[in-house]
Length: 237
Figure (cartoon, helix red, strand yellow):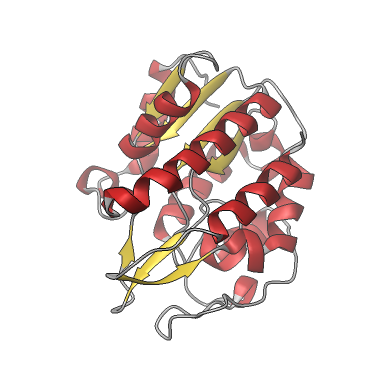
């Protein structure tokens, strides 16, 4: 099964799930930003034997805008060179509008991750020869205020079917990508990788999350990323 089919199946499955307050809006960028996500898979997904970096779920100004993991619009447009039509979520939060690549807002986590990749590897193709980035969960969860709610903070009755679906999709993605190593971005992703892959995908490592909510990341995430990958045996240019 190829990456596009796996992703489309995941998108369809999570669309059938329901979530209650405090979540008021659920964005599925694999649906409304599918052309951009498909462009990402087609251009950068067709290679095995790399390090697969696994994030948590879309941020409202990143993947929720572009359909690309950690997909800060400027980075996706100008560094990755991707294009594609983005429509709008079925129910759009007035404080979190979706403008696709035309969005004037940037995502800090995406700017840090892809900024690190650009600084270390130069061209996007050079980075993607060694790495590929996916997200564990394709949904973004918003509260009435517009605040982002991460999947780990959902109630158990909502988490369990979501995680079961995402676990299965992650296992299929990793099987298709056949990586030399899976590296989780942050603690949540590490836990889900270990649960979903259960020793079937080789070594699983962890690097710090670039979120501005992390004091350590705010003091120099690129340096932390270099050190974490070096400990895992990855040579950084």
